Length: 429
Image (cartoon, rainbow, N blue to C red):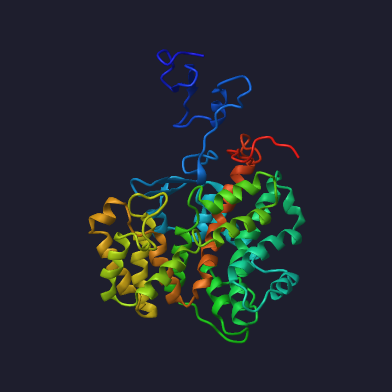
């Protein structure tokens, strides 16, 4: 056990005031291994020190090469590429390829990638029957979660997670089928027949078509500008590091469960209002405010601690969410096509105050990605209960990239965190 004075420069020295002992722990790439803390003991029977971190706020669960976030500077990068450049120049399927395979595809690779995803968009007829068994008023996100889990029974080969070819096939299937499942979940809630995907439409166009097309015999022309806007939204939501649903994906995957079961778990995490339901909460808040002249009263209540301002602030970003800037510009284009959303003026006034008021600035309460996305989805014709479903469609590629990385990581073990036991000591009947 080295002394604190003589410890190497790439290590952390700790003196335990309880025992007077000194410890030196190696520091690698800004982290130390939590298991090293087990060395810190007060006696031979002491199990050793553990870190207590509710919500994993400052605990790294993996090493990843996929997404980089710098919350202090408002930076988001996929595989090193700034989100601003990607959103402007790349399609969602190109970004999905980047996340899953590590690089943007060449023209021939893109052709194969699109073909393989398009080929797998159809759902088994028995799966349609399964979806038809949900109640008429079932929440679309509940249908999505259940159907993703059911897919594992249709593709038992998916359990071979160590097999590269099997992983590749399941990735095609899940990226391809989730927009179809999402569209069918919407149509189920509307009491409409399911419409199969078309091979001659883009990823976003196909989803809009099979979602809103009145019937099989009716033509439906997808507005290319709306399809482009949706595609950009898909790009912005494709991955976001180790968030709640991604953590669920990796945790379930650590048991070597098939990716459909893992994706169902991730979607279930996304179902929660603190995660995938955040943009729905924004729309509900704007509806509640009702008019611009009521905004000052709302701001006053927020400062007094009487209510929260939904869509402002972020667990990770302490600066302006870079995705929010892109979405705000896109919102204007969508509203030009679909007509101005009456809630937009309220949103703009809230943002104006938040960006100029010291109360919000000092607390880093800037608009996040959820602040405008709900307004865009609403203007496109989606009901609020579809918002988390729309989040899940693009996030599937990020989940799968994270799943694959975890399965292939030799350092990963089955997730089994420790606890701080506060119950009774030993007692007897």
